[in-house]
Length: 150
Image 1: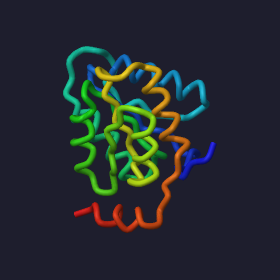
Image 2: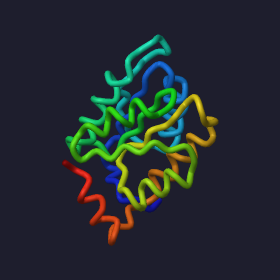
Image 3: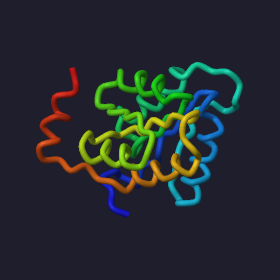
Image 4: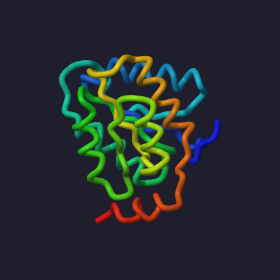
């Protein structure tokens, strides 16, 4: 599998209550592929606030101790907005394989945000697989990515 992620490091994953079921599905996928990961919660489908899980996942990516992150919530927007408050985090809201691929190729995204209420589980799995396997193209895109941080 070709990637620019350091897959010797674990994956950081988190969700709120709306993304909990899909998170369990994605965790099963990661386990099946042999990836190490840390689940930052939520740990049930009981109502929870997405920033409580998005901030720790984003901080884990910001620290450099994790390969990449996956965040899930109902629309994917809440976790993406929250995660993108962290320096060096490029959290991309994706809804299909092509968007996940472009988020990696052109934006060097390091957190995949999944809208659990709007896509089927098999699409979520395909997006995760694509996100992991796609490298950043660099070149003209590197100049743009370098301008993101405030």
